[in-house]
Image (tube, rainbow, N blue to C red; front, side, top):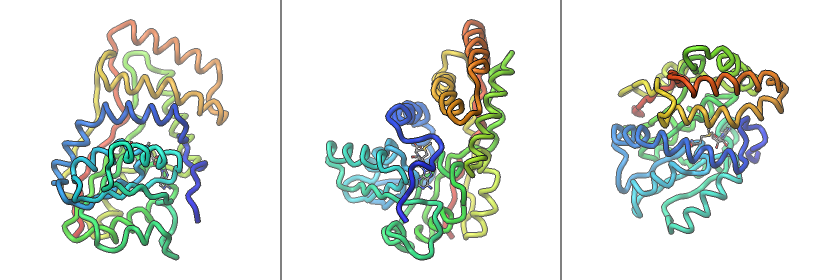
Length: 280
Ligand SMILES: C[S@@+](CC[C@H](N)C(=O)[O-])C[C@H]1O[C@@H](n2cnc3c(N)ncnc32)[C@H](O)[C@@H]1O
């Protein structure tokens, strides 16, 4: 079966790609620190599962160098094409973009599973992907099969999306956050997916080496507040298109955000975490 990009709730249009790039820049230091903890380095073979347009894949390519390999997997052809072009321009032959549906059952084996092989990879990176999958098990089974013993998996995923807030007076934002959650659940995703991962990964022979919070609480001018404001300027359109957000609700949200930005406010991100796992 070919991957179906239409089923991915955030879409793969150019505006979303640009938002992912800004998001990547903001969270890049935390990403690099996680890779340091996992010992990702030169000559390694690494996976970028749900790579999107491949902003992290390019960083992984730099890390592993010309002797390493990066298999960058996504279900959105437009994102993989973007990555392919970037690799061509930078002459990064070590990156292999691969179209595939990570939520698809592993039997019968797909082209993606042939590319993954068994016990072939030294590590894997997974950020903001598990939360969108209608079935989590196929992704985790693939990681368990693909990583060699001692291979490390770094995940950055949400654990409590409801914490997304603006204080004081963020009632409309709280309403907006609950509609986002409703939208993702309706598409088979789970915005609190990290709550389920420890049990599912342990059952597949992974051991948790470290975990930490990536949640932030910051003022208006902080890059992570700007990241949230960026999301708030794009996602209402998608919620509205799904019939989950009205023009009146949007007007109330905009008034609330304007007031929040005129005063000293606290922005609290949806709670997300880093986990570093080792394949036993
Ligand atoms: C929020 S983006 C994150 C992209 C990238 N990991 C990053 O951190 O910038 C989620 C990505 O997951 C991909 N995705 C969603 N469902 C997928 C599936 N079933 N199989 C493969 N990729 C999927 C989307 O196409 C999208 O590129």
